[in-house]
Length: 128
Image (cartoon, rainbow, N blue to C red; front, side, top):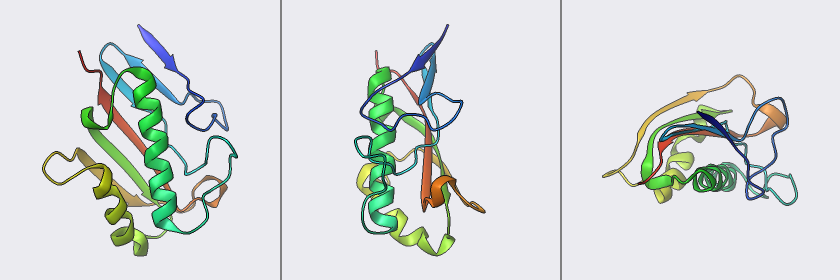
């Protein structure tokens, strides 16, 4: 059965979508913008700060569903500028180390909602 995931620890959806959905043991997050869930604003700074916030938002949705960053199978990462790739990877590697990192796609998007520098989505499984 499909379950809708909702948490106040991540930004509310800004359109007709859910923060995440689970089906059985699988959990899929929507793309998480780097919005602070309390202020609905981007953190001060640049790509590093926005990457960190996006990943914290992904983490919050996963944890609400009974999953975690440790159970992520795949991420899809959208960057506004591929020039930010190295700085993005610095922060990404704080959350996922090379030994247990999930599969990943990382692409440059033409334009992200609210002019974000990054958006990240994940597929994970629930721990038993």
